[in-house]
Length: 233
Ligand SMILES: C[S@@+](CC[C@H](N)C(=O)[O-])C[C@H]1O[C@@H](n2cnc3c(N)ncnc32)[C@H](O)[C@@H]1O
Image (tube, rainbow, N blue to C red; front, top):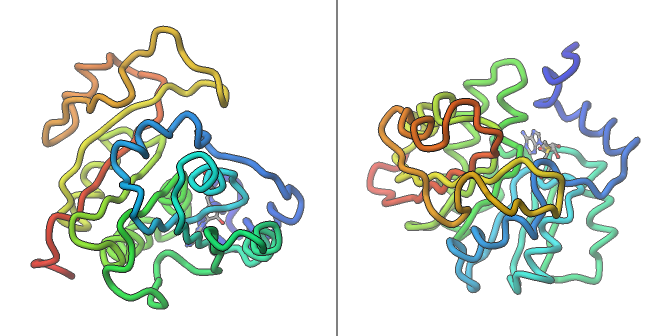
């Protein structure tokens, strides 16, 4: 049986964790710190899919502070989905569905304007058969997006590790933003890089290190736009 971060791709691990830690807990960043990026790329009328939503308060922030009115959340853990369905039973803007992101066949192609992923591709990359699982996930994200829709990937993965994976899965056009790894609502007085300004991104991502310096202590936010389904998989 997988142990430690190896188990992050397994439903039993998350069921156990959410039974013992009902939350709420947000990995990496909270809604409030990411709001400027969400506002920049997600129009108000978009239907949003949050993949691997967990028990995070991020989706509640999308509705209460962002003003979005159609936020669908999926997660592989039945424990967390039942808890969140119960928590938000009086909030029609927030839907929770148990689903594996590698098979979202319950959704028609082109159902969503935006897909938001905070830590879920990272989790899948920790498990066994990670490359195959990640490709299946990315192909499903691509399929459920409308043309010109955006996949917003918040990750600890630097371009050196994530760019090739993204490019090999589907023909995204990709922009990159970064946000410092600060404790929750803290805001840096002197950010390393302005959040809403894309970081120069060349083919292999080496331009990012040139712009930010070595070992920048940031989370990466990849804005992946589905340009056309002409070459749909
Ligand atoms: C690192 S947590 C992030 C949770 C939340 N997005 C946040 O920002 O706090 C990863 C989440 O992905 C979910 N997950 C892992 N593998 C999954 C899969 N194949 N399909 C759907 N959800 C998955 C886990 O249950 C967990 O809730």
